[in-house]
Image 1 (cartoon, rainbow, N blue to C red):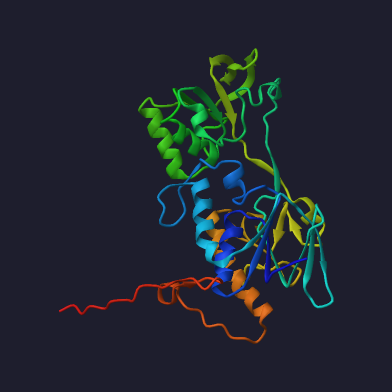
Image 2: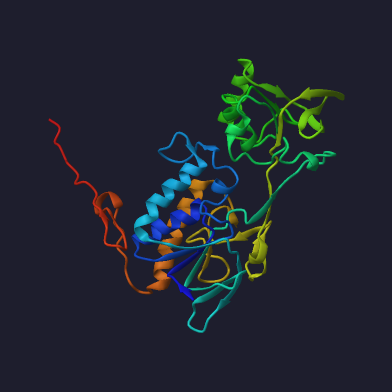
Length: 350
């Protein structure tokens, strides 16, 4: 039996940052994740994808963000159960929760924080004949290592942030980059749309809108695709085709835990602490939903912070916690290590 103050289900960025916020409150955490390493999608799907909306980092690779978060939480010595999926949850007589994984590992904690991201997921694949035949032979639905595409002729399809971001990134690596989208309008960040347009205007990428990839061809490896443009079918030679149409998320066993679900996400009370309909069970990050929800990593960080304050009160009812800024008190780990904040120097201005 593994016991902790907060059992975190999901070891992606939001789950990892929860360890830090809980550690400041002297609460111990243990994390469960079905993936074999921490980091969630950032590690498994796109470790080399650049992220642009993390405060203080104009650009950081998803894998590097995971490494920084692991470094940040090291003083709080969290436990990890990796490669196992949280399957069942039961509440004990003392109010604690008992969570059992698919491999039979049991965890006990008074607070559960579900930070499962999109849950289990599968890429949305376009209905193109013979597409599956070229998977891992020129067709991919994620980009783990962009170096694979160095000096290659690459075609991407999609209109969201992933398609835009990778088009921008690969324009410096690939021999040629073509982005195909069925509409003239994109769903991604306006800044990314502008960058893609600038690359097109400079002749650094090919942009085909509206257009649709309708065929793939080759022998042992992909050698060309067919694009429908204004009713005409155009064959374009290429080395790689990457359709980026998002993920089809599934909550998995969590959908059977008695949680209130809306559109494949867990409903929470965002007016206070992101608690679910089960007291003591919280949901933070992309896995939750509430009015005005934005699926951004930095929003998950904010939700984790407020959740930990509520968890402290649940674990220590009636005990007052005086919040101290880390810039004043520094960070003290469970192992006795302490990073002291530098003393402020106040200078008078004549």
